[in-house]
Length: 459
Image (cartoon, rainbow, N blue to C red; front, side, top):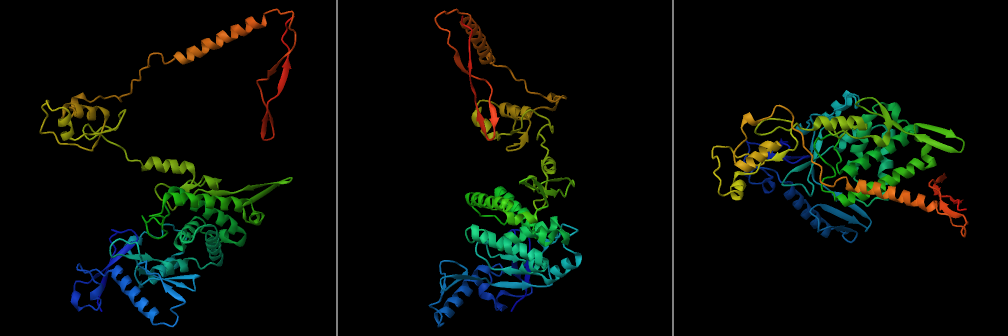
């Protein structure tokens, strides 16, 4: 039939290719109609051939009135009795091997156990022929690995509850099993001990996964548990993701306030008739504890949720230090990009430019070097470089403080006018004048402004 080599070069994230071995000729293989000119096994051709065979089988079947094949899709999608949808995907089982793009897994040393990791890698993975994949690549599937990792009954219960929640409150097809399984397995790495997955802790785990999903929907990135640099939300509309985040947030808020979820939280303190729910989490980076809502994905590793301080520190460390292309300085008041020599010649056609200078078009430069290049068409000499750090000289605009002085003068004039008015003696008018007090009383959730009758002494 032919021998194929697995090509996992990372050109298509989450996918691989099957190429005919060098020792075999294309015409000698029984898969000749599915092999491209370059020797790759086409998943698209196999999927189209399988759909044609399925259509022929349904036409000759006595159940063709009950089963309908969707001819508008490139995949084999069956609708049974107008109520059940079945998707059939051609696949290859790859046992006893592990993809090169997943060699970094697992990143955590605490979970899963080494014997489980060994059995998962020995069992291997599957290659699926799915629609929407660029070229003739095959998509990785780790369904068997997820089944082995989620053998615990409580973890299975959490997955079943999550599927039920999202199937009832979101449109079908938006959140798939691969999204929930990845989020659940990431939560398992955050809480590796089985003591954190007892029945009384299921509520905490559910709320944690819901918050993780909200964070992923807002950042528009959902990490794959095993494969790195794979975004499960790739191709999703940002508007749809924002709507999903709002719906999930409403679900989490309801779960937080529901009396059926109170038994699942870490700490419940009763103060009279009020109940205060305290939900804390431990940061895996610094070890500090904080509110669950303050945790967000680490910029260097989006599979780990850290506190705000660790996130800000990782963001600072991740930033690349800029350096000027010409003078190699890292301190400047403003970073600019060098213009191309062609644009400078068009702007200044009468100037003679240095032809020996290399064209640094698009390179990052300091403020002085970039402006010097734009004006003279050559690089700034090294002897013009300053030893101290340049600073901006901000000049005050004329009349900048005028509005403030004007307001002060108006206030002073109004004060003198009020004093002169109160000093007037009017014997025919001695009634009290109502005035609004300048303070407000805070009563419950409303601010009440009191009106007082202050008499002005006009004798």
